Image 1 (cartoon, rainbow, N blue to C red):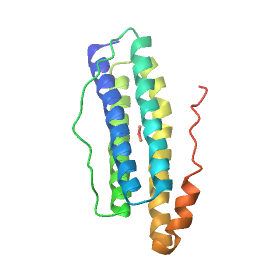
Image 2: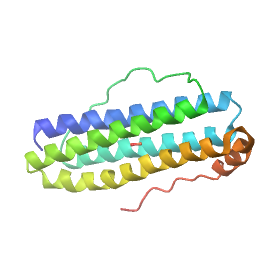
Image 3: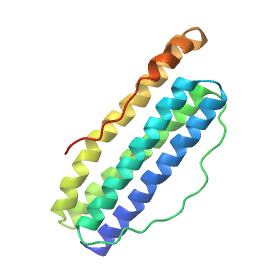
Image 4: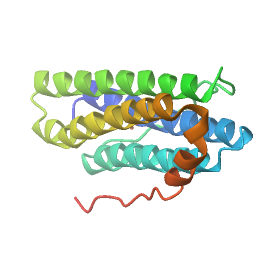
Length: 165
Ligand code: FEO
């Protein structure tokens, strides 16, 4: 694999771990508000992000590259409200989508067909990620405080099953 592609994949692997930390921090914020369902849901999101990062790790290694683990800035600890937090999450996912699209462009430019193929999963995943947060924001805006308790209970049942590929 070309060095430029390897560096870009390593950067995204670390960004996915950073995303995981952001959602874990959001889970802690929700927990502090007493919203155990949102806390659980966001911890599941954290697990998904670790999975996203690990997929990058395995692709890098499978292609004979070296995965380079970096640190990252501290995630936000506090938000103005639950809704503000979810809107921040959606904006974060839009950044991830743009980053994945840039990686696809780079793989095309370098004729790296294996990486191009590998990234297709993330293109679909990002459509889901943005839709998930958009839906949740809509639900929170609809139910407002009266329904928050019901929605909180609904979120407790989220599970994560890694795809078999
Ligand atoms: Fe790994 Fe939420 O994108």
